[in-house]
Image 1: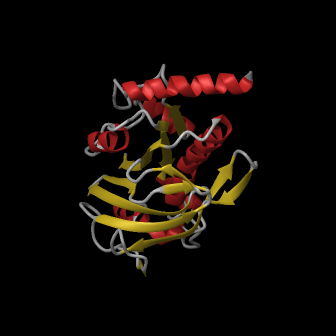
Image 2 (image 1 turned 90 degrees about the vertical axis):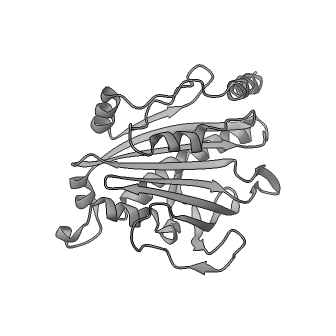
Image 3 (image 1 turned 135 degrees about the horizontal axis):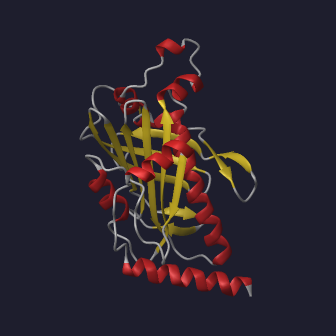
Length: 266
């Protein structure tokens, strides 16, 4: 009975994604205040709840929404958004640098952090299935082009605005994968848009087609700290209720892992 119920839920989700996201709005003042108070808000899109509500109204907000959630299809199995808030004082306090006065919390520092692709290697995530932390990426580095295999150094000079890069990763659930990442930057915001350029496999099964895993990060400076908006939408082949549920949990855990990757580099 439980299996049938899960299948029914998944079917209704697919109906929702065929219809697409009808309503999109920016986070209001109350939502921003709540994020600042709690540190994190999570919103999983469902058939009954289709509205994006957590993204702060900013220069790159519309582009971010369209990139991650503008092409929802009947295969979309996971779509969610998170809004975190971290104060600059907390970033300094948690920094691994001994000289706390040297910790740079500027938007320029954020720009370099999100371009530090090699530092994704060893990134941890919490496995809800195994109830323990595991390594998400065993390999992660920038490559020169989508067809390249040779690692090149992270590109950290100057502004990230308008830059497009490519990266290779070997990760826990899907093995080898290639991504394109685009950056936008101004004086108080950095945006990062990623999409897969190669298929993603679950074992020997092709689970995600190219261009159908999209991940976004919008990091907005409010003076005292940062609002960090993370979103993800993934079209994946239906593998059965149990495996689909496992994959959904895996995708959700990645958002927290990305947040940690950003904040632990200061």
